Image (cartoon, rainbow, N blue to C red; front, side, top):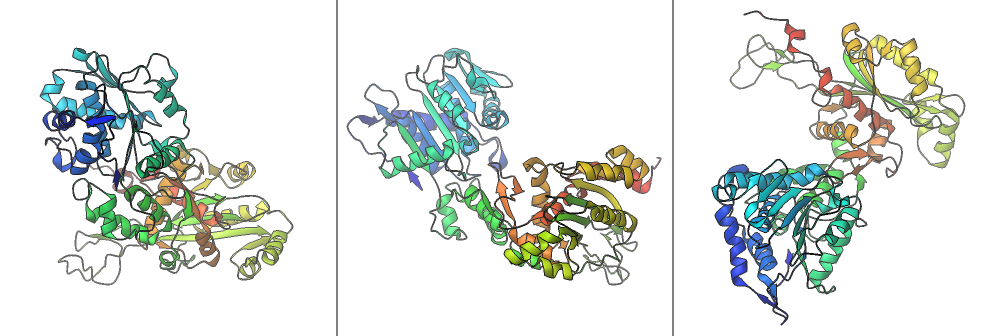
Length: 572
């Protein structure tokens, strides 16, 4: 953990009363509005008081104005930075002795900027003293006595003239895709006597962004390699060489541990990270504040191999299933993956527990039922792959990939020539429809126009959800490959693997693809498979994720059955 020192260098002095006054403002006028401490006075934690508030507002220039004009505060997630930021924004608005103070919340997205403002707004509404001094609106707080205001910046507000900022609170700087907003806002403080621009953030993964640049600058200031007496920096993090699974390291990186974040929570997050290489980076970035790479290998093969439960395609006959179709290119692998969700659970009949019928004791609680047992069925995965015969031979020889062996084993179908023959895929989809109840088939729009048209015309698919429900047709779902579409089912896929709720039968081709997968992560923690950074082909895993995207009710609630469909309407 690093913070600015309190050394007097002759040009500045430390104003104890000013430092005391900002802490007193927090303790007297502000209350916590969330969690177990909701309603209690906001007494800054040791690090908030000694490492941030007192030095930031206590150090003065010879003319009595603040020493620091720019601040960078970087702490791990859930350490109370948003609440601290909201309190500082209110102090600048209500109690900084600045007539006509304009204070703004900014972020990469307006909704993100509104998070800190909304916390501040609730603090004002919970404080009798502040509320009577202010007018509170949806996106602004106005203090008539000082002609001051605190507002949320809209997405394009920084392009407009007229902003004369006394204070700027920039939230989650690591999510800012380019430097334009930051640089523009900084120029809008030039006319003020003692402006203050503060960036609050957790670590990011792209050091070429504006946040990466400011992070390096802040580290230089803290180390003394950069001389900038107007720049304040506080960074709480674990060193790169420290053992990330060690609770002692967590304590050093998380200054609010035991207050706003618990050891039990970090332990649970760490346990997940141990099983998932991708989540390790998420854990280290969000909870140890370490800058990590964006694309990382995703699946731990030990966890994958524990899901090699047998998959019997004949026993699945007649069952509901959902498909994902990844055609990639006509010169490479094409993948169709079916996912069979667990059968609906039914009540035992001799007890109230819901489970599937089995000839073993129930064993739940005090139940003595000897007829059935509670068994949680997995999601069965059934993959199919195609490759042009010429590509198969070339890649088997050149890249040493076992395509020729897999073709002989019947795990991949080789189609004659140098292009995939889509008639084979159409034939398999028709067979699937005859054997199983294919509810929906997800496809990537790129390269799928022809086969989608053929599926509608020749195999009686539909693109209309109502028609699929009313006429029991298979629904075609255009499935995007971006974060919005891919992240929820990808995360659920990982959870199912870690919970041993997936059965993939140990399919060799699918395992090879699982081992190849790297994921890309955005600043909000959303993920998607990254074909460019993956070591080899991952199309089968992408198709599996797409299948889950249309199979899981909580991800695709449009498919969730109404209770009236299952039991009918009851009259009372």
